[in-house]
Length: 606
Image: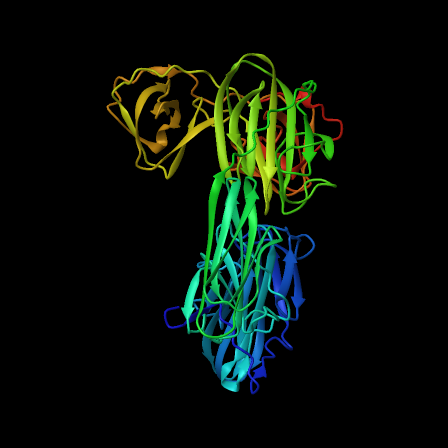
């Protein structure tokens, strides 16, 4: 890589004497698609393409392929004349280009992400046949990939994608499109990510390959704001325009020398789109841009409605709103098994947009007395009420954050309300009510300590991996007080900053352990629970895990189309305990189909 010059985000101007590249004409690409981001078998779709120039948006690239979390590999052999070649790629999310099976890729945005940016690199090739491989990875959101190359020795130019490049807006960053004219026309000569539109180029060109005069730039950004009144200030030479959420608030598209323009806008709590446009006619070129808050606002706080709680069937009543504030009448009211959803970039339900929507789920659960852990992971905001009391309040834009709360609940009926809003981009919520544990008074410190030897170790509410709840996790090298052990000494009870739980002794180095009291006689897993008489079938190959979460150990695989008896469920109906040919473990509800006529009330919470 050191011997190659990576030219980020520069496209050459088309001169009168240059020759447009005919890069992929006649090429036949063999492509394989994978439903993972690691190009790992199995191949779920394959085909032949004539060129790599795709914009799938939020959709799937082929039948049977995920819309998100997929990867693809193209390969072709092309006959090229000798010369110095320049390759260009533009993609969301990542692209890697390898020529002639080289150990180091020519372009690699897997290692150096450049989402939505034009990236190029040069390589000298001999005349003859050359193998070109392109790897692509899509994680979430929009998906597109473009490739082009040109023989600079023959005067060819590029890239020629023959499309309007998509604009991506990482929150807080600006996507800048540079044009070799003063009116933002045609395809941009360069697309780059910048921290601010503020620049002072003087009498110099803004980028290599662009003129010092008669150029223009468009910056686009999504900004997460706390709400209130904001002042936009610009000073420029020459013209400038500013749009906020599509509305033109500053319009000074004219020759100018250092004039200052301002506009005050009132914006709500959340993410807003800003577009700054600029052109330079002649002479010095600069633009100063500033956004400042001149009065504050507060995020909305909405109390849950007073409703008659649904019957305790384990189902949830879901209210969908076509706004992010749970305001007005819901667009839809449906019964759902769980609040857990992964909509990606799609709309959650007919009549509701893919962005700027909200949902309220309400359910009554008949619980036994005990300590429960409520866990929720979301993009974007979330609130959780238990019996009308606000227990989790994270009503703000977020990406994949997890929030938890532990509650001591009495036996009987309890009402849960989960509220969620989506701003923009991908949308998901993962909600779970952990199985009840025993309320433990922290035992007296024994003087013994345990140092973790595993990379990461689960701390559980009881000394077994079956049917237990993970209270927290500890990392290699960390040391904690030991407060007890089980009867066989295979598990140790440790105090992790006030959380007391059980860790497996094989992954601990215990010191001064002579006087450690036995605090539990439960040394072995309980016998498998009895079948409920109901069964489920796998819609895809699904892992059988030791605990009802995706980070627990894999015990086996329930193959697509196979059935297994149901032994239990978790409280949020997102994981199901099964016995598959003697392997007892948990499968995720997103990959299975319950048999017709399943009565959730007759399936116990484990």
